[in-house]
Structure formats: C-alpha cells, structure tokens
Length: 492
Ligand code: IFG
Image (tube, rainbow, N blue to C red; front, side, top):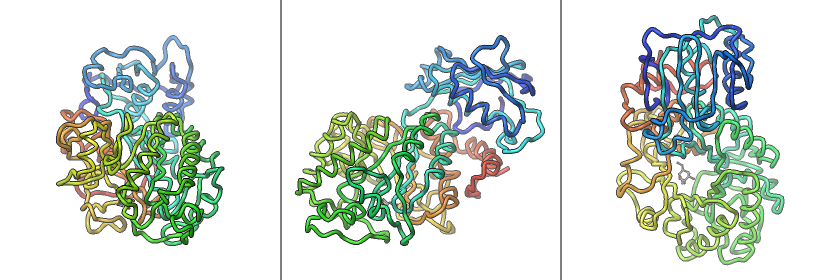
C-alpha cells in the first residue's frame, strides 16, 4: 500500500510489502450489507466482466464486507467512528469491517480506489485486478461533508443530480444541499400552492425553460442518495431571494401585486411580505411539504441577502419561522446572517464569509453557541473561477485554484474554535447552464474539499494530495467527468 492514491487520504495506512490480492474471475463477495455489497459488485462488474455474486453466507469469500466492531483504534482517530471502517488485504482475501452500513460503504469506496484505475471503465478491460496488501484504518474528521447545487438560477434534471450524488459519494461526501428556490426559479412542487411549480418554475437565468421537480422525482432522488449514505438537505431561501414565489402569488407581496418572472442575476431586491399573515400560511405549508419529502435531519431556510427586508422585519420573520422548522422535527440551517435572529436550539449557521471577516452576524451566532457549517467563499465557493482564464464562473471572492480549495484547516479558520460540524462546497449556477459546466467547476476542487472534510489535518499535505489527485484523472475520464486539468496537478 505504499504510494496508494486514495482521495480522501485514509487516517492510517499500514502496507504489507510483497503482499498482493488478485481478484479471481469466479470471485464471491460475502456481505452483511446488501447495499454495500451491491455497490462494490456493481462498480467492479463492467470492467472485470466477472459475475461477482453477492451472498450473505459463504465459507471462503474472496471479498468480505463485515458488520461488526472494527479495530478499537478507530475511536482514537475520529469522533465519528460509526462512519469509519477497516480494510485488511491479504494475498487470498480482502475483508472490510465497519460498525455501520455507512462505514462499509466508505470502505468500499476506498477499496475501489485500491484497484487499478482501469476498474472504472464501463467496458471489459484486461486484468489482473490487483490490490496491494496491508491494512487501512479510517474514519471521518467531520460528520457533515457536503456539496450544494443551486438548481434555481439554472434548473438541472434529476439525472444530473443522481450523477452528482454518485460522484460525491465516491469521495465519502455525505450531503447534497439543494438550493431549491430563489428569484429566478422555484424548483419543488408544493400541492397547497400549485403556481409555485407552474409559474415559479417556468423559467431561469437567461430566460430558458426552467423546470420543477415533482414529488415523485424528488423522492426517487432522496432514495438513490440514501442508498449511498448521502442526505439531501433542501433549502427554501427566505425572506429574500423570493421573486419566483412572489411572481406566482400576488398576496405574498406587500403591495398585493405580483412582479414578473426574473431572469437576470441581481440579488437583494425581493422580500416576502413579512407583516401579512398569509406569508406564514405559505411558509408553514411549504416547509411541511418539503419536510415530508426529506427524511434527513436538516431543513435550510436560507436567510441571506435580505436587503429589501428591514432588520426589524427580518428578525420578526425569523423569530416566527425558525420554530416552525423545529415543530416539524428538523434542525434549522441558515446562512450565517440568521445569527442575528433569536437562536433556535440546535441551530446550524452556514458560514459563507471570507477573509478577513468574520462579520457581526457570525459573531452573534458564535456567541449564541450555534454550530457552524463552513463554506468560506474564498475557499469552497465552486462558482469562483480557477483563474482569469476559466470560461465560466465569477470572481467576487477571488480565484480558487485546487490548491486554494485544499490548503486550509477548518479547525482553525474561525476565531474562538466554534463547534464546526463540517464543510460544504456550494456551486451557484448564475453562469452554470450545463452538466459540462458543473463538471468543469466541481472537479477537481470538490475532491479537495472532500479530503478537507474527511481526513485528519495531520494526514494532509498538498504535495501528497496533488499526486494522489492526479491518479483520479484517468478515473474521471473513464467515468465521463469533464474535470478542469488544473496546471498545478501532475496529471498522469
Ligand atoms: N451570494 C448569494 C448566492 C449567489 C452567490 C454567487 C450566498 C449565500 C453570491 N448568497 O452565497 O445567491 O448569488 O457567488
């Protein structure tokens, strides 16, 4: 296992020099978790051409995924050992051990990266399908490791989301936050307010056709993500960033007049009518229906850039809406501006500031004891250009090369050592219209963020990362990912 090219880097790697496992054509996978077993077999079958049956019981399996107590040392390396795993590779077999199915799934992702990169081919390739011998002990640094896609500025069909879930789960990210509403588009059907879909979802930045997920489509996405231990976090951004909803229902507007659809890229001009009772009926209905669609613990209510809402109205609005989220059994997540509003127990503020801040809203949140989800705009905002030559993207938070996205410590970013639950990389889509655009801005930087969120700081360094990342290039090419060939990476 010397020089293995796994991203994110495992916490502990113990090579067994001279030991190699070779997957035999008639190999059998015995797994205590059907999902993890199928995830492994499904990933290996196309390139190997082997049948790779997955069974619950077998006397001499070639690969074994075992639920149980992995090495107790796992608890020494992570506060989240339940998502950790142990892999032991011997000449005659591979055993992956994890306390939970998520742990086994994460072990499977690492194991796939231990096979030659040709294993990611969609067509049968020559072997031998070897895995270097040794032992890996690994578990995540943070519990929340995420990506966000803004599907409001530009709409993307469920297939694009499923493809993104598959890719982010390969790097042990476990959250996909969907920015489902904004000025330009409403993207989730709400039965009680049907014009949100038919009017609010009718267009997008640039005037294109837009779109809106049906509940059935959204449920299919949630199920697909759950099978890969990815939680969907829905965001209904309020009270600002609401022109799509305001254009669908005149009564939500302070003057009772519905504005037209908005297809530009300005921000801060819209607000729900905070002093109308119908606004809270609207919010209550929307949050209830969105909550029913997402089994995860989080509900994101936005709260950013409410420049057309007075501070008094903003605080009043948040004071009424946050308890609605708790009443629905969910944890409030909001952009860190909600730090100025009365604290809701367990609240998480998503920090999107950049050096040299933090600002007073964050200071208020930290003083209130809020937990923090880190999305520093100058580190992980994936809509930032890599450099002046990037054909799409913006640059208000500066340029973000892969190294910029990688070379920082979430444990020391903010003063006062707040309770950081994890890291999330948002992709805003004002300038992102196609899957090729998503790929260009997302890869390789999302792999960097995945390592920042998963690996111990002590196991991380740019020199090692850049060479391990280079080995992802051929795999992305085989998987049809149109990544940015960042010149700082020694691509193979
Ligand atoms: N800030 C806005 C986003 C988007 C972004 C583009 C947040 C929380 C700039 N709000 O980031 O809606 O416009 O980089």
